[in-house]
Length: 263
Image 1 (tube, rainbow, N blue to C red):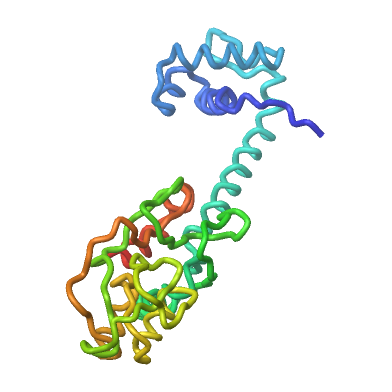
Image 2 (cartoon, rainbow, N blue to C red):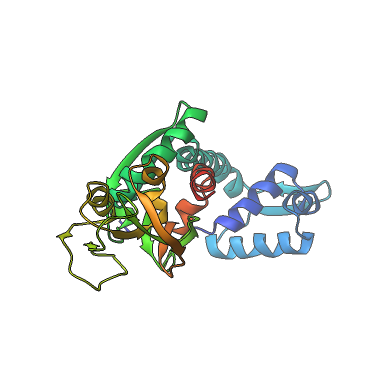
């Protein structure tokens, strides 16, 4: 069934004027001029085809037509308020669904989320492996982390990083490169080709050669002594970005998590 277009703004003005029986006091409540209230009421009367107010020596009075619809109108506004509260309730939930590349989740995200949840034991996370841009609506996501030059079509914030580093099991490891799809170095013969940077880090730690990987992913393995850095970190035009469409990005729980992850 096709829904009738509702003049909601005019009805809101009518409700205020009916409560005060005064255009002036209604205008004060709505932060508009009395003339604007009068214009809205006249426009609403034209739309509905009824007279809503009559002026008498005692002031404004509601017509029977106005009184007949007033209770249902106010009940409707209460239902609107309940609908808004229901839609906003998700912002206060403690559950967040995050899509991220598998290697980033394993090498970095899990540890960061553990630290975040240690400060708030009520937090719950749903993690989805996704290397490409995902459909936020279809996957019901709050956030995604992607590898690229920027946030794309979404809101986003970059995760701080030193760029790309060359790592190996030891400083004297063979110069043979370990290849992975996002590797920036392609010269030389690869002893092994792996599916992502996380596997490249593990292959380097196993002594299979050197890998050029995002410093962000290798930081824990470097700190743990599994691999060493050869040379200096190199800036990269690519990096990891936390992204979300504007509605999700504005949620308080999302903003709090972005601040914790991006720092």
